[in-house]
Length: 219
Ligand SMILES: Nc1ncnc2c1ncn2[C@@H]1O[C@H](COP(=O)(O)OP(=O)(O)OP(=O)(O)O)[C@@H](O)[C@H]1O
Image (cartoon, rainbow, N blue to C red; front, side):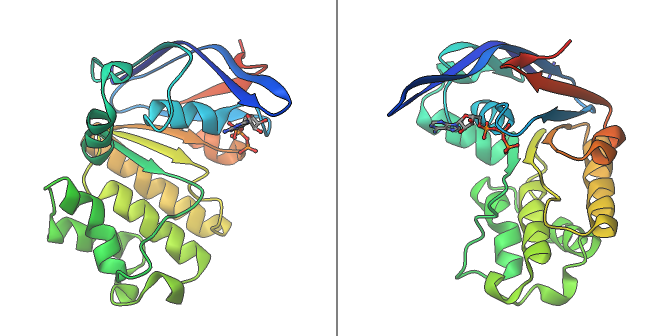
């Protein structure tokens, strides 16, 4: 199993007191599978993605990626996991303003020591970014920036792609294209995709759907 999350609990401690978001979430994803994570706003989808991506830690429960327990890793181990095995696409693109599009796309794979210029060019082409490779992020539209962020995540060929509304800034036709590309890549590479989405249409294109309600996976 590529990803197993078991009995995940998370409470945030706020000025108004503890606020429990996840109350025993179980989730599993096989290689080659794509899973849509749905649920009302505030149901904890992003929180769960952060925990799986090793950006935060659960209060209870276990997250295994490729049989490695991410709770048992230190910060360096989790950072290495994010550079290599796990690719994350967040709502904020976090592009590096001082780098051209081509260098933004190559950034993660260079860090991971797996830069493949031909593959980067292929990704840029399929994302419709070839004409923009020498530009800086601020010279791009929101949708173009989002595609750069997706290309950057896919460039190191991660085994697990975690995506939070990755096509939220794209028009319907472009979102469909980008989704097709992500699903192709996941299928070709035998990777797994866990994607948060509010769109039922997008969720239906994935192999399975898991709905969060009241801090748990709804039956
Ligand atoms: N660091 C934090 N401290 C306190 N509360 C938080 C923190 N992060 C998230 N929350 C709260 O936890 C709840 C779940 O947030 P989360 O972002 O996971 O929801 P979501 O399902 O992704 O929502 P959306 O669909 O609107 O993006 C929200 O009520 C949010 O306010």
